[in-house]
Image 1 (tube, rainbow, N blue to C red):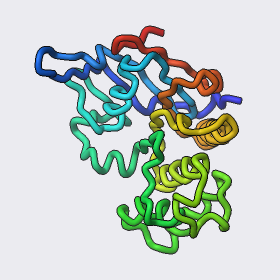
Image 2 (spheres, rainbow, N blue to C red):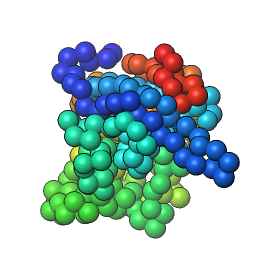
Image 3 (cartoon, rainbow, N blue to C red):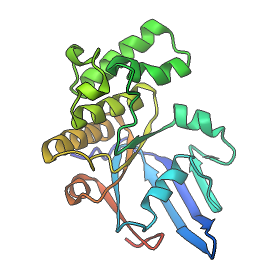
Length: 228
């Protein structure tokens, strides 16, 4: 059940446009998008391929700056922020292909961003253990390499890495695209728990109608615009 209490505005797209030049024309991938995302909520962004979903996620994550307009996190534009710190501390991006380090163990993958934050080793390891357990991965998994895990298990390691780092906004680009129905359901239940019980803002780009149905709010895009 969606937690309707303790919600606040956390991330805002304010008339965001993103355009790029090809050899022959200027392409507007995102056009004049305005939307405010709240904590404690799971959002699904849907629409046909090429409608601007992934580009919008990239601007929200600070991977790209809008051509026009602003992305505002906790009152500050990403143009004013150190975007490396923003991604390390405030927003986490989870991808369809997991993006785990293949030569690091499960535990080492989750510890890595906390090492960049220079957290004390004992504190970081305790938090990594806690978050891995919270996504259903007990100690028997921690010394395994990513290649020794199923797709669903790898995606849950990616989620654990994101939440252990302290980011309160999770941006997920087709996070269940490589998963079967059972593992998709487990991943979605994890996102719902993070939002409804712990106050995260979770924004998912998806083609999966079940993921959209299980989200609190569905945002439909077409030709770079939000249409519903």
